[in-house]
Length: 331
Image (cartoon, rainbow, N blue to C red; front, side):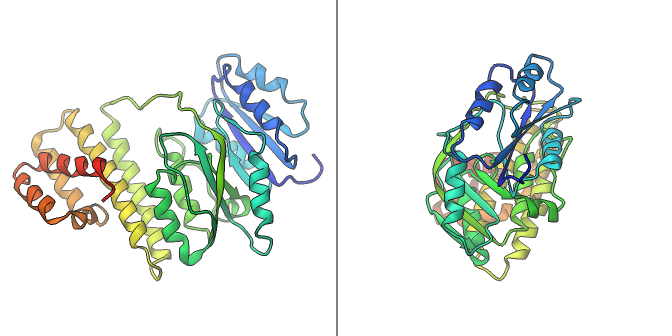
C-alpha cells in the first residue's frame, strides 16, 4: 500500500486454525477500504501459520511470524509495524460486521473540527453493558465517561476502541509482557491518562467470543493479583491526578467497585492457598486502609454499616458481606 491507511488492525494469532479464516475474511469484507491488517503469528503449533500465509497476497495484509512470546508480545510487534492514523485490535477467534470501519469513519466525519483521540463503540457481548451516551466528550467530561465505561465493564476491552496511533507513540505505550491477566486494562488506563477527548459511538459491529476459559486457581495467582492491583492503583492515581480539578466522584465510585472485586479475588486466592487465617485477616486490614478500597464503606447505608460492624468480629465474613452487596447492586 502506497498511501498510509486510516486504520491499522492488529490481529495476534496463536493456534487459531479453526477461526482465523473467518476473522480475516470479515476484515477483508469491509465497506471502508483505507485500512491495513497486521497479522502476527505468535509461534502457532497448529495450522494457523499456513492459513495466514494464504492471505499474505492481499495488498493490505502483512503477516509476521515470530517465536511464541504471548499475546502482549504479539500485539507489540503489530504496533511496531502499524502505520495507520488509528489502531484497532481484533482477536483471532472474533469477527466484525462489514460496516465496522465505516462506522468509525462516519463518526470521525461528524466531528471534522476535532482531533479525535479515542473512539469507543459497543460489543456484541451479553456479559458487558452498553455504552449508552454517544457524543464527543472533552477533557473536563472524561472522568465521567471513564466512570461509565468502568460501570458497564467496558473499560478493559480493547476490541470496541479505536486508538489514535500518535498518542500510543507519544506515550511510548506497549502491552506489559510476562503477565497473564489484565494486560488490556493496563494498556487502556495508560492510554486514558494521555487523552484529552473521547468520542463515544452508537451501535455495535464487533462480535466477541471468549474461548480461552477462565484462569485456573493456581497457588501463584495471589502474587499475580497483587502485581495487578499495584499496577492498577498506580494508573488510577495518574488519572485522578490529571483530572483532580474536575468532578471525579463518579469515576472514584467506579474505581472502588473494581478494586473491591479485585481485593475479593486476592482474599479468595489466599483462602484457597496455604495462607493462615491470621495472614488473611492482615491482608484484609491492609485492604480496608487502601485509598480506593475504603471508598466502598462510605457507600453503605445505615443498616448495612451496622451489619458490617457486627460481622467485623470475623474479618473474612465481613468482607464477603461487602462483596455480596457489590454483586447484588451497583452501590
